[in-house]
Length: 217
Image 1 (cartoon, rainbow, N blue to C red):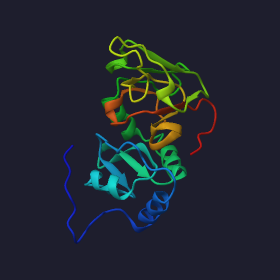
Image 2 (cartoon, rainbow, N blue to C red; image 1 turned 60 degrees about the vertical axis):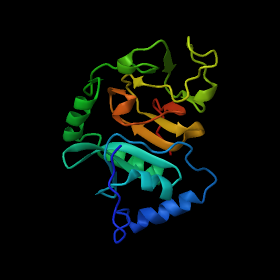
Image 3 (cartoon, rainbow, N blue to C red; image 1 turned 90 degrees about the vertical axis):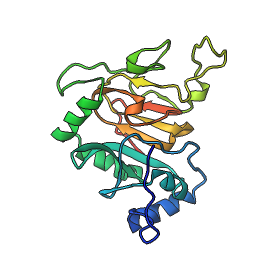
Image 4 (spheres, rainbow, N blue to C red; image 1 turned 180 degrees about the vertical axis):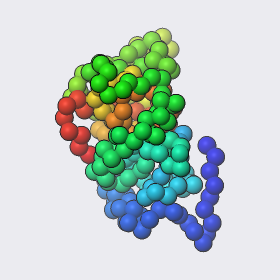
């Protein structure tokens, strides 16, 4: 991933408020085990972050992201506070431009009102293929995918940890986190689309189908 290091005069475009939040989060017990490796631009407080690697070093706590539009392109809005992320995710649900961009990047999307299955299906192969499928029913969660066995000819101890390569469309929102127990970088998906995991660059060590429950972070 290419990046451009900010100059010493302008070490970061992160706002002071966001910086203070990150400092507080960094003092918590949990620090991200896996770095944030997005394949889309990252936006914080409306500003483009040019050096994600540096952000990983400076702000190692939990991170919450959701798809948004930035300068007519698909991007990820990042937050230190999960509630702020959820607020933003709800605001952009009806964004027509965002829906068009999602359709361009997705394997398939459904319009509101179209029937969509209630279960969340994850595959260990690209484009909704693979030797294994992990199904989550509404309100179901897997806090630690390393404890979820996965059949593999290459390994007798294979699990679903960091093995999700594509996700089928679901009627409900879902979230995937890079670390167990919903820590690390949490991607919140509130759109009825199927995706390859590389669309957002996420890895999954825990996952949740929110069903009819109000999402909480």
